[in-house]
Length: 51
Image (tube, rainbow, N blue to C red):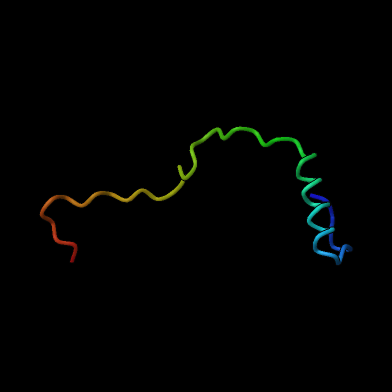
């Protein structure tokens, strides 16, 4: 991303950032599915009370 700290005008800053984003190379496809590291929730057994 371009360094836009020196630009005070927000519209100008947006233009510079968008141009930099368009020029940047595309990110690679994900190798693992999204959320694969999330903690898995086990389903409660039927009839078991929660408390």
